[in-house]
Length: 185
Length: 138
Image (cartoon, one colour):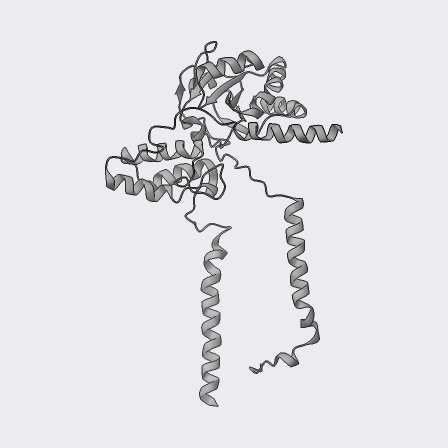
């Protein structure tokens, strides 16, 4: 191995190295632009039991919510939402449709005022069986949820089986019903 | 024309969406320090190494997002109750994965980050030894 590397004697192909590097960066940036990084933070609580909680009633029309409500033998959807959350309003008719198809839906309202929530439910409909109020996001943190809306599938023994991040779209209704069915076994 | 109208509408509607946030007062310990300065220092140290869930590159100590406030509230309450800071970090990692912690861990996917610098030092030492040996011979 020679230690006297003379730049003038470097092989010809090295001339193309900077261009190749540059093109490499261009490809990297283009790939990043075309497939933006997934910024969802998945809950690591799938397959684990729902943490213990007991929340007061968030609205006038529905009871509060506690962990024992999920151990009644039937799978539930647990919708994390809030009246101040715009996509939650968009999601409301989808939840209503899920309820019509037989889904049992419970809600946890994050940092919400009772009056605001009552108005939200009056305007968008109320597909919830029970709604608990989580004023300091304590249950939200305990189940590994990082935003609203999110919907968890909880099986009849209170085990978290699936997490859906963001509002459920109409085309995702069959998928969610399937997840509920899967949670029966 | 319709497209222009939609664009204009989107411009008008966008700030409304951006303002969509809760109006609840912050959690009790979101912006209030613990009375015990030793415990507060512990909490602060931990909060600076916990990552905000919605503002991707801020610690919860730096963020004004409501959920970051709620996380600070929880950290301070737990520290005040005598919980170990690392136990709180583990509790959060169990829920959100390594994402939530700024303190790097050696795992199956991160070990090269720790191994490569060590390897580089070894290689550099070997190269230097060779060169110095050559110089001595010359």
